Amino acid sequence: MKFHFMNNHKMSGFIGMDNMLRQKKPILICTLSTMLILAGSLVFFHFYFSYKEVQSLSASCYDQVGFPIIEKSGTKIEYFHCDVE
Image (cartoon, rainbow, N blue to C red; front, side, top):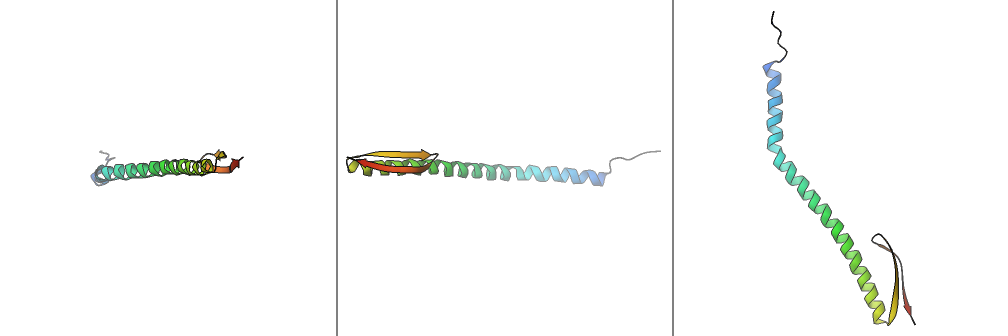
């Protein structure tokens, strides 16, 4: 009496799935890398433009011979006042 636990038909499905994953792996890596670079760029530019906004506000206040008072929360300017005496 012989028992067949593994049928060749079922086994070929697993081999096909492994082959399909192997073929799609470079596409998946490229997609994830692109998404990571894009997300990093968005964060970088968010901080950069926040910095440039503070620089611009400060420069315009200094042009009026004033002293800028700036309160920030993260990258958001919560309060800005140009103290001109």
